[in-house]
Length: 193
Image (cartoon, rainbow, N blue to C red; front, top):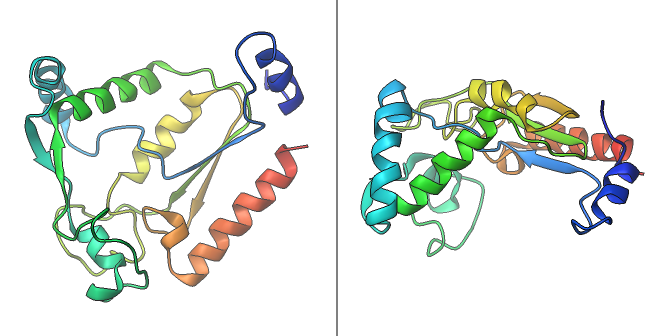
C-alpha cells in the first residue's frame, strides 16, 4: 500500500528524521551497464579488491557522452572541465565496490516510503564509442535496467520515459528537456501536498 507524503513525514518524525515528501530520480544508476562477466565474476573480484586496495584503478569512465555535451566539442553546454574532463577519470576499486553493493541492495528491493519518480530516456546508445545518436539516447546506462529496477525502490514508483533524452535528461535537446521538465513538475504537483 502506498503511503502519502504526510504519512512519510509522520513516520520519520518518530525517530528517523524528516524524510522528503517525494523523490525524483533522473536516469538513476541502478545496475551495471555491462555483460554477465562484469556483473558477476568481476563484481566478486571487486568485493575483495575494493576492501584491500580501494585506490586501485580498475577501469575508466567513458569519455564520449561528456564530450558530446560540451560546447568545445560541438555540444550545447559549458561546464568546468576540471570537474568533468574530456578524457574522463579513473574508476577505483573501492568506489566500484560501493557502487556494486548499492546495486545489489536495489536488486533485493528497497523500501523508499515516499512517492518516487524515475525518469529515463526511451533508448540506449553504446557507451564505448562516438555515435550519431549520442544526442538522443542514454549512452551511459542501459535504459532497460533503469526501467526494470525502478519498481524495486519502493511501493509507490512512477516510471516516465523521455523520447530523445540523453543520460542527464536536463541536458537533453530542447524538446526532450522540456518534456522532462513538464513531466517532473507535473508529477511533483500531483504527489507533493
